[in-house]
Length: 319
Picture 1 (spheres, rainbow, N blue to C red):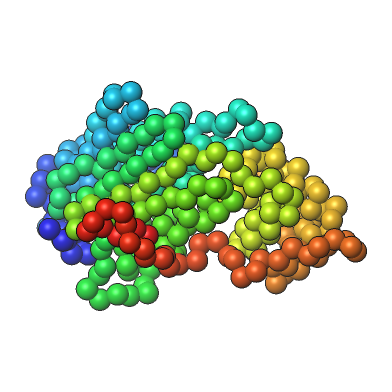
Picture 2 (cartoon, rainbow, N blue to C red):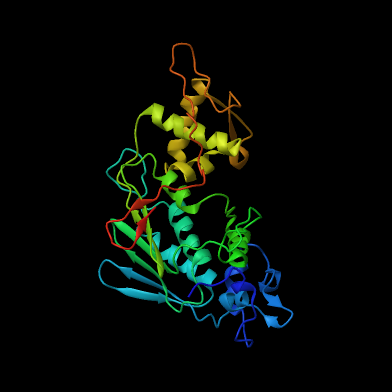
């Protein structure tokens, strides 16, 4: 069944809701309680968003590990999200056979894929968000296929299936929801030999995330990626760059020092306020004499859009 875009604002069938678990999750992150979440109530009582965030939430997430062990996460959707991240982080530990840290499943990628599953899933379907995980791949499946609104809009969060749930993730985790989440994930794999895949049918949407084996080691390739991130952010810290490139923060700082020596970037501030900028505000690195110039070549992260290709599975499409 395809749900309309107002489902999470409709009145909840269960009005006897409690929010103890939600308060435990929210408190310490935004210093607030469930009452600070907008549209948790309607004129008729609690909304479906309230049901999603309540202790009585009827939806769940199922994690299946490579040893056959399965765990069901319940409680508020937000709690399921944080519990899943905690379990999956153990699989994403850095590979030890590299000269620098390479995460198998970067936290930024897993966060994007999991949030995508929760804000786009069909909550009128009683099925579970399912995560199948091993050391080589993650497969995240959510009920409900590709969804488009009856009237596409460019308004804030207008083209997301569960807009109120998306607002909660934006408040807690800072997600902007600008552009296409699938494209964002693919961009984060750009410097790796692996390729994430998305497939869907009428009942479900699946994201396959391969474990990252390596990242391009050439200085020019790393510089190009860092220039791209700094340009998109109009100035970025080492931690922000690390989050987007999948290098460790320490390794990013080593590259940035060389880029400063090559007159490509400069920085202001110190500590957490140490922000790096491009010498050329148009996004081109300005090198020393004799050094090949590094440019974006029109490649800016988080560009909306995706390529649709036939899938090996009949009746499905691959993005």
